[in-house]
Amino acid sequence: MGPEIAIILLGAFAASFVAGAAGFGDALVAAAIWLQFFSPPDAVPLIVTCFFAMHIVMLASMKRRLDFRHLWPFLVGGAIGVPIGAQLLKVVEPGTFKLVAGAGLVAYGTVMLALANLPVITRGGRALDGAIGWVGGVLGGFAGLSGFIPAIWCTQRGWPREQARGVTQPYILAMHGMALGWLALGGLVTPVTANRFLIAVPAIAIGAWIGIRLYGHFNDKRFRQCVLALLIVAGALLLLNPGGR
Image 1 (cartoon, rainbow, N blue to C red):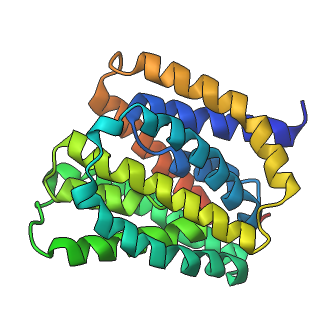
Image 2 (image 1 turned 45 degrees about the vertical axis):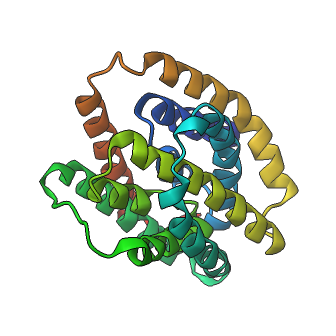
């Protein structure tokens, strides 16, 4: 097994395992690993392709819990943001990209660890939801990380966990699908992307299966804290070493 295959399998397995066991963080974990070794134009299409496929399967299991009433402003904003992010990926220097991604990982991990102490936000209505969707869309087209800002926002809205997931899960799927289309139009989805995706598929399936089976056997709070701490470390490594590939 070559080092590239090992890196692909490690990122795919770790990301899908975390998503299955914790219900969040797949693209974040994959980005934290793959961006250490692959250039952003190589890593982002792989992230989007892999987890677009995974979210299709995950969404099928929760179709009765989808919350379209709250979802549509996020989708409208995201649809506007994705092409902007996809264009940015083509022009932003890799070092700058890794600094942005690293800062995002550190910020997400830190905010989520402190989330219990943050206030619930009830103002802003659908216009603000749409703005958050736009930010997620830009990040989705730029880095494959469409979900973490809306996920934080839905939590801060005070929505129950199932309602929040009924918004974020289909939103992430839609943003990955749009990002995949725009990246393909920009020439960033290549035969190499397809080959790496096929390599990753077994690891995604196995990781998600194990994670789902172990869901509920972990101390949820402790497991979540460990994952968030790992994201902070990975983000810090990207910030310390934005060069490389």
